[in-house]
Each structure stands twice: as C-alpha cells, then as structure tokens.
Image (spheres, rainbow, N blue to C red):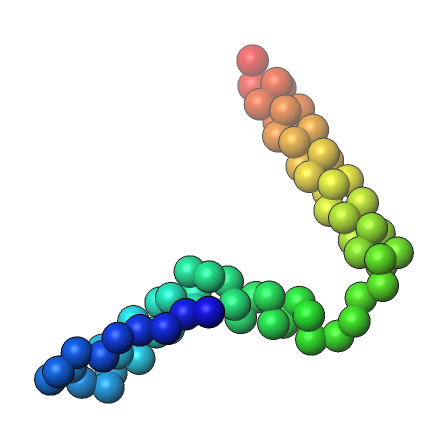
Length: 70
C-alpha cells in the first residue's frame, strides 16, 4: 500500500503528486478496475485465449509485412 511522509513545510500539492505517482507505479487503480466485478475462471481463460490469438496474429502480420519488403 502506498504511503508518503510529508515533511515540514511541504505543501499539499507536492505531497499529493508523490502519492499519486506511487499509486500509478503500483498499478493499484488498474487492479481495482479489474476486480470491480467478479470474473469467473472460464471468462478469464477465454480472455487470455483471445489475447494470445491477437498477439500471434499481430506478430504474423508484422512478419509478413516486413518479409514482403525484402
């Protein structure tokens, strides 16, 4: 969990920026959005399968694109 130490004479805006930076680095907001609704394991596997397929197709497309230039 992110936490910051506010030093003497430090204004609120700089402390808030530090806190926000830590939250962004730890991907807390992304994790909260992902866990907002329950996702059954079958749906998770389905999404992973689709993402893997997209990744493979993207690599294949790039390979064909650069292969045609040779």
